[in-house]
Length: 499
Image 1 (tube, rainbow, N blue to C red):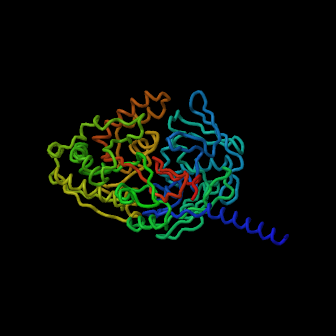
Image 2: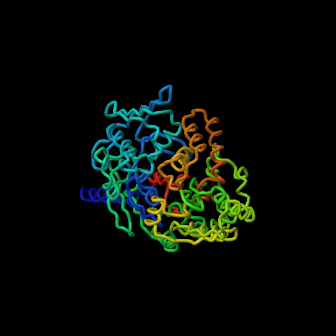
Image 3: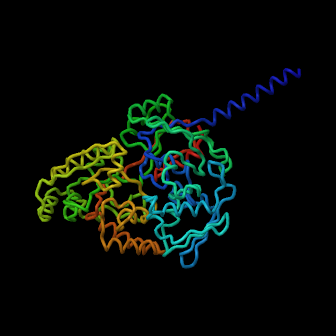
């Protein structure tokens, strides 16, 4: 009887262990492109952001599904009456993946690293209002600002906290990231996969539920789709409308969708002809038919868009406010004549290597060529595209960029003179003044007035022709629970997902 009871007990124990193992799997993810690096202070491309943001790294704050600011590594904060001093109380018991404790000194070092000219972070403009960062004690950080910064708490959600030992290191984190997030880096096989494993010491008890994340790099859309339907992959995150349409109704597959904060765009280098002339930039906008782009390249799953996503209902102007959005090739040709440029205007357009962007570029090329331009498309691999983008080595480019919950996070770094992602070499005194003013205002109605003016000016004569905001989809196995697609494309909800 004893042996029988022992066997029964052991059998039950093995069953419980097996059930636990089955519920805590490595989630197989199908991704179209691999990351170009994993340093959270240097990356700009979606494939890198998807891996590190909210999974490996965290900020003092975070952005939730409804685009609201919530506590993360900082459990609370206070703001001085003049809006120039922010004091953050850090969570206790948080550890980096190397086992070291996350303390105020690490936050201070992370801020200094981001602002360092030697590191040259493209995110630096988000903290340009910070005058100093100080560790009051091990669990308290004080940020003193040069002037009030209305977007600071939102911006801090994108500023990863890294170990203080990395403050002056330019290279280590690109291939060997060390964060505080629910998953930690284990292996990177270039063009193959990136494997993250569960952070057993994660500060939020009970999370993550998965034992790891494996980002499989699968460039072919058809292969990813087959992999999802046959169970090889459990998730295809942030897919385009064409892929979603092909997967709709497939057995064991479910789709999640939201309005995207990211936007498709045509960027123009205003430091050299012909785009140094605002009339030529305006002509580009009149030549473009945004509704046609939505139908032809996004399969109808999107809307024509201006400088801000319609998902930002408190900020975005309706595109009807922008006169140059009225498709008018004749007006475009007239503007080129006023600009004194010889037609057809021969320019090259570098294209981000994503199928949806290639489709967008082809439609735009045809539209511009009917309105006095002669556009040559240059398809590049991702690394070269990003390098040319950073170095302003382009006439035009077609791409997709991430949007942010607060206008300052996009506008200031992109269009302010000397902004950290102002690769267009754009400089306008009126825009600078409006952006400087808007980020210091605490009253939202007053901020909106300033950003309304910014949107109206940028829409037609700025260095970016904003095109569309798509419906953002994720496709997943119907066994995946607790995950939903987020407007900012973050995969942070994977920490609470189970499969």
